[in-house]
Structure formats: C-alpha cells, structure tokens
Image (cartoon, rainbow, N blue to C red; front, side, top):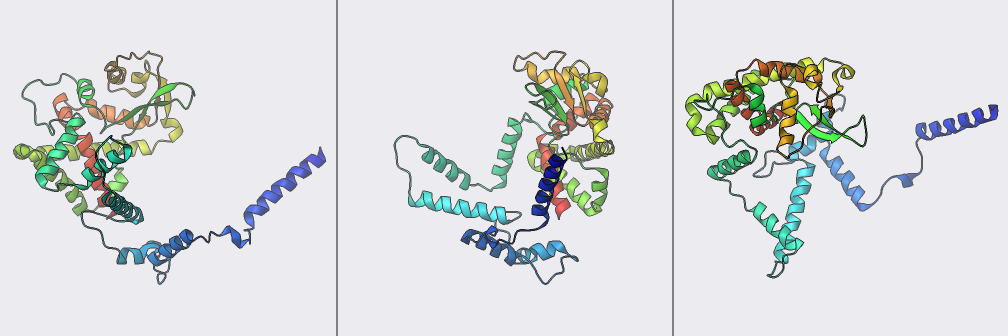
Length: 346
C-alpha cells in the first residue's frame, strides 16, 4: 500500500515538473513560413515604444491602428475583415478568369451566382429602406412602430406577446435538457441582445445617450415617415422602456446564480414567475405546429430574477402601450443594441 502511494506521488511530481519547467527543445516553436509571416504581422502591428504597463492596448495594436485605413463601404476593420476581403478578392478573380457556361446547374455555378448577387449592391437610400422593410416583414413586423390603435385593440398583455413575439424581451428556446440528458426542455433566458445594466448605462456620456436616442428617431423617420407627427412619443416610449428593462437586468445580476436558476414544469412555471399566464404563453408557438405540451414538460429558467421583474413590468403596461413597445422590442431594437455597442466601444 505504501509503495502504491509513493508511486502516485512520483507520478504527480513528474506531471507537475513537466508543467512548471518549460521545455528547452527549440523544435516546439513553429518555424514554417506561415508562422513566420503571422509573427511578422503581429510584430508590425505593435508599438514597442509604449510601455505596456502604461497602455497595453496601444502597445499591442498601436501601429496597426495608426497605419490601417478603414476601407470604403465599411465602418470598421480588423485582421478578420482584411482576411475576408482578401478571400473575396481571390474568389472574384477565380470566377472572372473561369466564367461559367450554360448547362446543368452545379454547386459551383450556384455559388458564383450567389457571390455575384452579393457583390451587386445598390446603396441608394430608397433601396436600403425597401430591403430593411422586407426583413422586418419577414420577422413579423410588417408595420412598425405602432401609434395608438383606433380599432382592434388587444384585450390583454399575453395576447400581445403571443401575437407579436418576444424576441426583444425574452430568450426562449428548446434545448437538450442538461439536467436530464436524452430529453428536451424549454429554456427561458435573457434575449440574445441582453439589456444594459445600470452600471454600463452610467458609463455612457450624455452625448452618447443623446446619440442613441437620436438614432431611434432617425431610423423611425426613414422607415415610416408618416409617423413623423408621433415621433417624439414613440422614441421616448422605446427609450424609457429599455431603461426599465435595464433596471430589471441590474436587479437580476445581483442575484447569486445558484439561486437564480430553477428547473420546473409547465404546470408550475406561472407560480414561480408570476405576473403573466406563462403556461399559455409558452404553449402558443407549439400550437402553430400542432404540438400539445404536457403539464409535466420540463422548463429551465436561467434568469428567474429577470423574468420576475420583466413580467411585473409588462403586467403594469396597458395592452395598447405594450403592443407598440413589443414591436419595437423585436428585430428593430436589436439594431439599436448594435449601435449601442458601437457607442460603448467608441
């Protein structure tokens, strides 16, 4: 027994020694031409005159930033973008030097047609607005934003959520059940573009906040100029609603994760979250594909605090107001989030 313990101790020491003491074999360093070229590019992008303890970002990327111009028709550039542009150029060269001929459709012919259609970009504002409206229509947002409805007023909040979707508010999907492999569960998480926390919002300057709000106004005017008389209330309502979502995200972030994740069933989910008839809401999309969920269906709530706060927030809104906000909270608000990320990084 003692010999066995000594053997395991020796093995552990050997493993530790191999980690702590770096190998001296120079063959472990890649010396291919590709590796040398990569090392040269990395070194050329660094600014070695800067002390990394003073400004590591400038030290690591200073020369690249000062010597690299943003290409036309792009808002940013990095090594990945440069690689993609180089690949596009090589593909264009291949297609131009080996043009397709008539005959049976092949994968190569289809790829060339797709590539050329992507390269033929019409950048006129009218075309861009038309294309954006088509995308919104495909996402179920044929008419956004909504002014106060004169007819067909929704009767309750969950009807609005069922009819207009929840992409801008919640992240609900069907995934493999981590807690019971071999089965699937409904996962309830934050939306893909998670709302800001109060701390992140405080870091934005007043001009940045104003720029963000102005973007909401500008994009609404471009998409729906007929709503210009209502532009103020529409922009304010979307902006203020996001602030309320921000507070919900902040409250949620302060909760210990182990207390914020709950595994429940479809039957019990309403009792756990409150505020809205969650069983009915979760059942709705499955009814469209003629699938009935059982009360025993597993539901995993990753961010219980967020769902409680937002459910309470929604239940306090009138259906008419929610109808307008939730439409703005789908695909279009994701565009706002992308702008917000640019603001944070600028």
